[in-house]
Image (cartoon, rainbow, N blue to C red):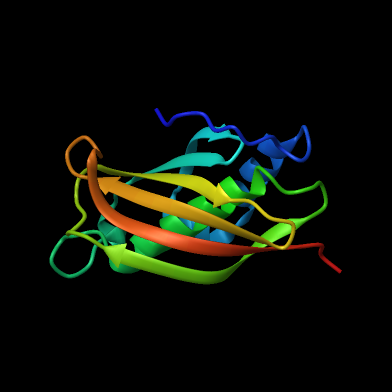
Length: 148
């Protein structure tokens, strides 16, 4: 699906951390976001579009698109952090390029620049009949922190 990166994970069990990120959040579970692919510096997710994801005119709500773009970016960033660290969104910007619809949305999060304290990730959200049309693009800066 998405090309592999040249990034090396900071710990061998990075997939478990990404799955935790996607399953432990009550909000993300309620949305129904699922992982499709996890690799160093990459996370691909999908969302089966439901009626409660839609706004008043039947398109996928901007808040849903922003949420999956942000969370997928966080999961991609988490593939490269040391064991025991977590990522928190420090800055988030999204461009909604066209109305989102279709039976499913797909989101591809790719790390652009990993760092010890900040990681920059790009997320692209695809919709349409085969989830192949780019509908939104986000730039996400993640803070890498050790919980207290």
